[in-house]
Amino acid sequence: MNRRFSWFNATALTLGFAFLYLPMVILVIFSFNESKLVTVWAGFSTKWYGELFRNQAFLDAAWVTLKVAVMSSTLATILGTMAAYAMVRGGRFPGRTLFSGMIYAPLVMPEVITGLSLLLLFISIGLDRGVMTITLAHTTFTMCYVSVVVSSRLVTFDRSLEEAALDLGCTPFQAFRLVTLPIIAPAVISGWLLAFTLSLDDLVIASFTAGPSSTTLPMKIFSSVRLGVSPEINALSTILIGLVTAAVITASLISKRSIAMREADQQAAARA
Image (tube, rainbow, N blue to C red; front, side, top):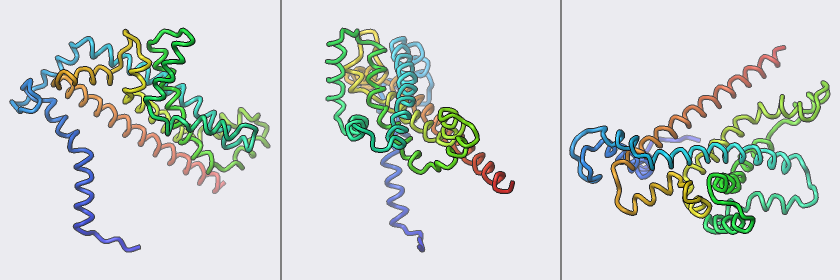
């Protein structure tokens, strides 16, 4: 297909990127604003970053958010990978439709309903709200995303590689650990990063399942914005944007490197 450059395509692309990223650029610029008013530029300054790191409430909320995100994304990756493997390799086992429906339900379920139902569950079993309840809640609604990502990779997986490992004396678990898991590792890592990002960004479910001493960063930012946008929030948002950008670039480089190494191994095996 002959694809020609046109001013319409360039304009549409420019407007699309501007709509997505121009607000972030403005936020980053005003995080270095000298003035306390976030809409008035008064000169370049980094003092709000210093004020941010002296704000203990924001630091505590950031630590809770990071801890919850790491634990919930790790649990969601383990459970989501197991669920994806069961759905793709399990065939038509009894209850498969119900099982897949329960896995995919959080994808379409409103977060208010999910948060309220989890709150009622935790109250009914007498579980005190805190970091553990937020972690369980985030694991519940991020596991389905991991399952979708991993199952899409397992569907296209060449099962003859596993069969060759089994013929060479591996047990099914060894074949999964030594053959299947390294090949689907990019999908597993992508699922973990997606679960980690969703956990960092969640506000609604965390508001239902958090306790008085377990305020997450989105909850803290939302409560602060209701009283007026502070330059410290701009500085905090800039740091988060930088961390997410660095994580995405690192994951992309790792994924490309693993793909290149796998292709090199396949070419070496073909030549042998």
